[in-house]
Length: 324
Image 1 (cartoon, rainbow, N blue to C red):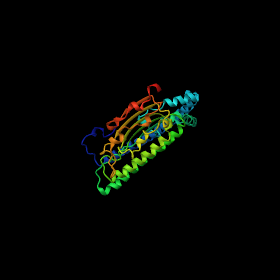
Image 2: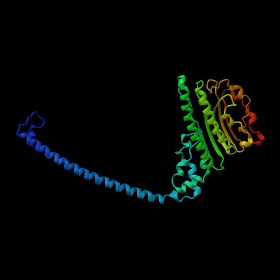
Image 3: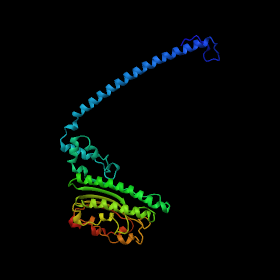
Image 4: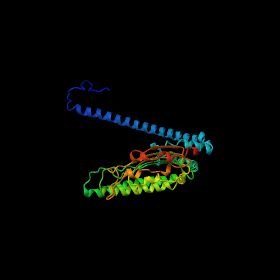
């Protein structure tokens, strides 16, 4: 830009007293120009924003009207429900967890018609996945802190159990009379390495919560078609809640055709500690008959029972060859 001081720019020139007012006037002149340019920029930005808003509004208009003529809108309910079922995740994967992000729940929130169809498709809700939280906190608490920390951990566990219980209740109700596929992964180890009273607080909470969920599942055992259990069970089976899943009669599971069961008896050092009670994992599992895997409908059985649980009499619990 032209300036009467161009030859002195970027030099060590010192203006005279008479030149200073002129320099200030030049600066002010350019400041006024910048203000004018800023105003033009603001006007252009406002115009651009208005254009973008109009463009967005038109795109929304198009998208919403295109939805009216989307091919999926013209599918008959039986085909659409089949599409819904194809969206279900494989059991044991994180997406199969019964949460608000489960595909069945998401589908039911798209529109009123889809919601009703989702509720009228009980197979959409027939997969129950329960992966229970593992309680394993820092064991190094002072005695005067043990009660407080134990109660806090128990409260968190109870909250998680209640969410699972509520979700399972919803799934069972919406699945109506459909056969169920159930996956349970849980442990009865309340607090690995703890001693009373901390572990006792957690043990009571864990066993009570497990018992609540197990009772809910057992109430629908006649609908079990496929089960996958990964269970870490305390040796004292009189206290164990998870072992109740295994001691059913054939009449309790009349349509069970596929079972995969992994049992890990907890060692004494791993199991919840109970004063005056000495867990005996080996004796408690000797010769167990496990009625859950009896039954004429059973066609596939996978067992993984480490340690003492390997004493299962597998040949006695399978159907006779002539009955298959």
